[in-house]
View 1 (cartoon, rainbow, N blue to C red):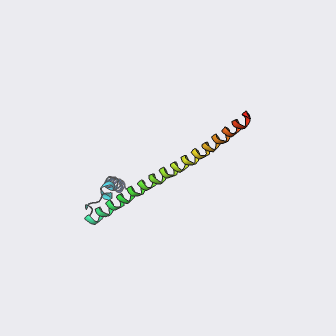
View 2: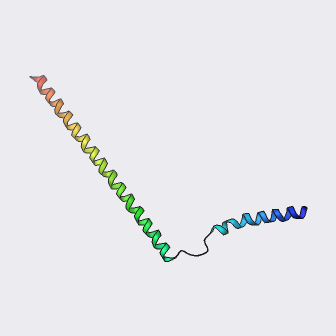
View 3: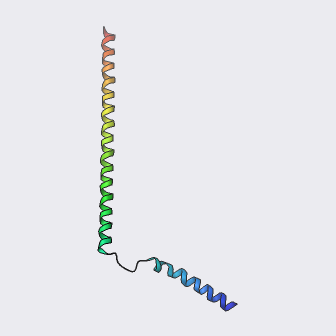
Length: 86
């Protein structure tokens, strides 16, 4: 029984230490796989750029709306001051 326990314990340790080696790929990626990875990377970069541009457009649009609103409020205040003077 002691030999069996020792054997099982040794096997468990061997398997545990071998796991990282089993998870690694032994063959390098093929040119087609590399090309696909590059294309995916480029598409992701394009998507990020488009997202940034869209966010910038939204910010500019909001800024314009705020500027118009401020301008209208300024006009109203100016009218009130004029009417108060009369």
